[in-house]
Image (cartoon, rainbow, N blue to C red; front, side, top):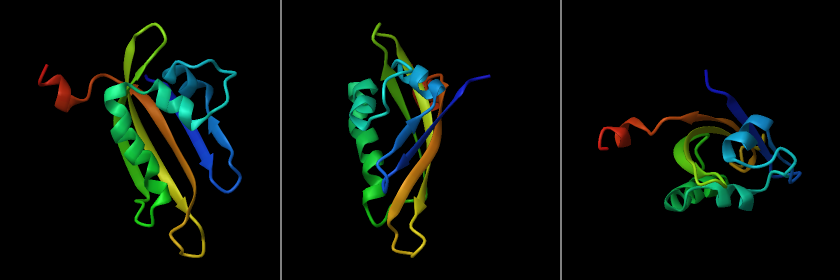
Amino acid sequence: MNEIGLFDVNFDTGKCYWSFELKRMLGVRHDVPAEFHLLLQCIHPDDRRAFGRRAMQPFRTDCPRHSSIDFRVVHDDGRVHWLHMERRAIMREDDSKDVVRIVGFALEIGAPARLSCAA
């Protein structure tokens, strides 16, 4: 069974949490603080643009409450791993569509089916 890595980003407080498992999947040390620019550095260059678009959704008024994405990360030793990430946007209670927090999980997967069939 795959491990599940958890994350929690609170836009009101600025606090960002990555579980030990998520850090392991990203290839970062467990004592490194969770930061968005570090996350982008871990993502395969060919996947950064799509990931960045998805990551910016909480700052738009039409942000979906649920989102998922498959992407690659590159570890320091050059190994490439596929991750599947699911996230949930938590809106402010006043119905302003203002996202105050995102929470979710990631798990390591093989290459997505749409890609492995073509290989």
